[in-house]
Length: 488
Image 1 (cartoon, rainbow, N blue to C red):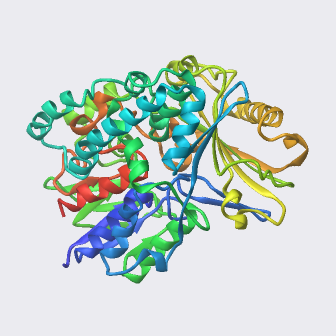
Image 2: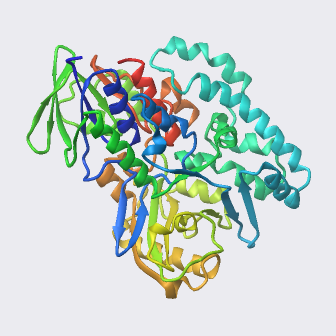
């Protein structure tokens, strides 16, 4: 084709969309604001330590394999995905552990040790999760939802699946033990949602994990991004880094050109945006259709995901007893989540996701050392938090808590620490209010009610990424590119 597709943003949604457009024969230019491909999946390398800054868990790997298969290539020749046996280790405030594993019998024994009657409950969760998965993922995740009639046609199925329930209510209807309830309801936090108000459609993650497992790319998520980047170059995609879009030029209801911060003008026939939709519609100059009623309603009533505080550090010793993925839970659960999602100040306590990639891949640190990434959900920038003042103190509190629990001696062995706050998400990723995952995955912000993959106001704009249908998380953003593919 002689048509030019310009993709704005090189997160996973933009990377996938660029490849899909190229596979259909379009001339493709990919523009990225930052100095690396990957968007949130950037990589930090400091003093021999490596840190993935974004997603660290790979599920549904076939969605990635598809991108290589578009060009009759095998992803295994580009990157090595290793399937993990231990998925998550949960550490509770009383010091007890719960290992969530690939081996379902081992998981069932762990459940039985906490509450024997919940073994049956977990089996029911998997059966119900499979039903939700078949409709919510297999049938609808790669379907466009810009047509309201199509949305209405799905209502009977959503009612049968009780999609109006929250994830917490869904889990609690089958599980009695509070620790197990917490362990099996954290999935919405992986896509920016509060388990107590996120639609139970996201419970399909339980079956998705069981169906395809949890994987880790050797060399980190950055190695996966590099593999996709290599494929882009091989297939003739024009990749331009350090290019931020500042202005959109339209003629007769179509975008005809984009202007960058380098004062360049790039002509285009089709635009695919991997920018936060709120930022795209609200802040990029020259967009003439801001009064579109769908955009205005979403802006007015949007509720955003929580913010993220991410602490990176190395250690001068190896913590061999620490799993690759650990969920360290604080003493409060529902109350803490309420403070994070609805509060206006920084809570004094926290729960943490601790990522130790050196458990699987020693290349992330010098010999006899470990690399760590610790993520703490925090309020987004709608809260009254001055991160320039609070950031270091908050990091110190996290180190102190880990030193007393799962990482004894951390205060003496920590090295080369730094952190990211919601301020960085706003500045580096143009995320509205510094939200970690764009708008929240609430029932009334899903499907048709989410930002549409077919852009508003102009004929040749399409959207991919966390803020669009079907939502955040790596499978979600990869599916958003499949939706856009159906329009091209």
